Length: 132
Image (cartoon, rainbow, N blue to C red; front, side, top):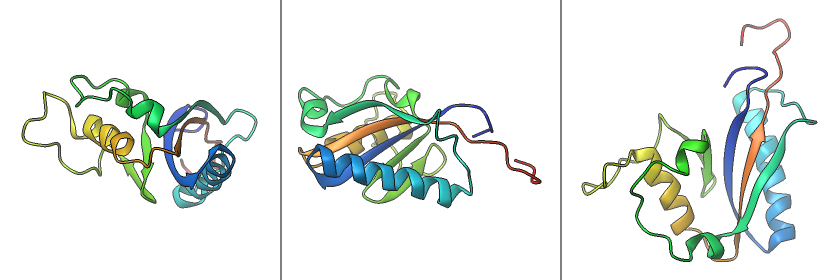
């Protein structure tokens, strides 16, 4: 991530229901900021995709392309942050899809049906007095 450049974060909430799921996602965005040592532009940072896991799971098949995983840089699943450099390996029969594509699939397919899945655009601000 670079200051002023958009990054996308997918959060699979563990809470049941949309209200609790959004509250949890907001807490995770704040944790992301702290964990990464960032200051996010709160006016620019926003959720741009929201769906219950059961909607995303309906008809979900093993991935055959990188889409939609290619659209996100970080995934929070089971309370763990993942990025392209730290994901479980793809299965032996990976359909030519990267471990990152499979991580996205695992996050959606393994979510509770009533879990709220959100994708956020986050915009880090420059770090005053520090090289970023």
